[in-house]
Length: 338
Image (cartoon, rainbow, N blue to C red; front, side):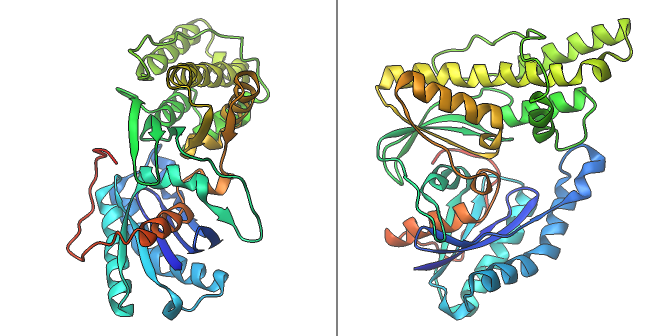
């Protein structure tokens, strides 16, 4: 089964070709236009998607060595995300599939992040989790602990009640006067700093739920206070601040995941979403795996951030289950469950 995947939920225009669950091509067009605004501007994002969608799909097909007539279906993200961006991908996917007389498959963006753990790369083979397993899904918009019982049966047992972990990274990066997107820069600078240099509070939340707004506020007030004493405080302590912030957020993430694993007895642990590309989090998971006898599954970096490979692979599993959509389907902005 050869599936074309299309991802346009935020500010990356991506297309991919997958043969079954093996991704043959996975190009992504990034949008640098948002950097000067310090965050994604929805209207600019949707305009950039309109410009990028045809070249990216063309690149995906050519890189995979596939003619469009060989496709069995078109899978696309229909939510959650920025509605204007989603409309571009949805409209293109519908028209493209209609012209080829092949079915369309809608994909929940967060469902795809989880199933990215099953994506294989061409000429490679990696071990994939068995069911059930726990997946820590961490991105700019969502932070969840998901109990994965099957490809299509997933239960959210814990989630953030305010900011997501990725959002906290980006907002704290802005406080530290780093350019957008700041999360990867914090990760880079943290490798040069002392994670014990500064202490920031851990939120106390019920069961497996998260909160990251308090960490963000704590950093804001601390930095403001120190800069009144020393205007060069950030510049003189940037690496240590990044390392301390990163360790705090990772400790919060790992604490709840450890509790969930103990309570459920599940020792297969996966991670997904954009923040799963963070080197500190990946190292913490591997260390916890050794200490707790977990089997840890971490996707390659290209399947962590927003990409169409995970969309195409999810489309493959839905194609196998004969889960198709009519052309009346519409995109949705907010996540309401799997």
